[in-house]
Amino acid sequence: MRKFLLTAFAAVSMQAAFAQNSAVTSAAMYQQKGTLDKAKTEIDKAVVHEKTKDNPKAWYTKGLIYQGLAVHPIYSKTIDPAKVTQEAYDAFQKAVELEKDAKKKQYTELSNLQFDQLKQNLYVYALNKGVEEYNNKNFAEAKNAYLEAIKHRPEDTTAYIYAAYAAAGAEDYAGAKQLYNTLVDKKMASSEVYGQLLYIATEVEKSDEEALKVLTKARAAFPQDRNFMLQELSLFLKTGKEEEAMSKLDAAIKADPTNANLYTVRGNMNERLKKQDQAIADYKKAIELDPSSFDAQYNMGVYYYNQGINLKNRAEKMSLAQYQKNGKALETEANKFFTQALPFFESALNAKPKDVTTIKSLNKVYNALGRKADANRMDTLLQEL
Image (cartoon, rainbow, N blue to C red; front, top):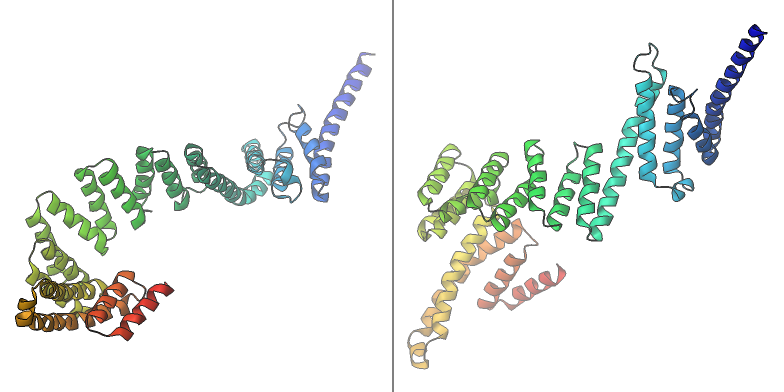
């Protein structure tokens, strides 16, 4: 009798184990047929049952079913795809964990094939949620969503930048700064990232010291960026370091004497220091080295235009007697400067055909010289932009 009872107990245990393994098999069959709701019901029971909760096949099967639910055109409408995708990811991870000491890692290998796609899907879900929350001005929630996206694709810069935007939207500038600096530390920062850090330093923290730190790093990362160069030099001027600024620029030109951009920047510096003759010499050198240099061409045009407009304004302010005596001569002299300005503005427009400021400048010069057809052409260009 005792032997019979043991045999019966063993049979019951075998039946229970078989029933649960059968549930895993049924779930897999439903999954293959595309009946994912029934597959989910079966596998949800199997992964919590004592007999199969440590079965890697059960967890791998759950991962496949949940992964399918998240992207199914019908089933996905009744669930939270992001949550279900995360559950799929966790299920595959569980299968890997359960096989860590096994000699044969069948479901580990199969699960590893799924992770990259799941990470991509989780990234997209989190990023989309961040965009939605940001558009609804829920900046703190948007930031959290973007931080979630970062976890899934830490090598991608988009989520970092969006998270920083969201932090700034919530006036959490310290958080935004931290995110931007993370990109700097990872050598993943664009010039726009340094621009945002500079904005925080100058407009929020109002710290010349912090701004200089940002510009030092920006200049190292983008040594040819004219804007960073000018901003750094401007900061030197602002803080009374004119000699240091010019010395640094002179050294750069000495090391790279054929770099037209450096001469353009020094021309800007000399203009700020009211050294107009030296500025003109620098712009001319920049144009000699690079005739397509927009900034040098435009600044030369501005110089000659300003000379002309100053003379024209003097003529217009004269009394009738003064004008009759000297006015025509002044206007003639002004037109000489306008004529000198013209080729520089035209070259600048060739370098940047859609630059509004240049088009407007040309419009003024053409009008001043009585070239109405060309002035009208500039008006047409403006209307087309």
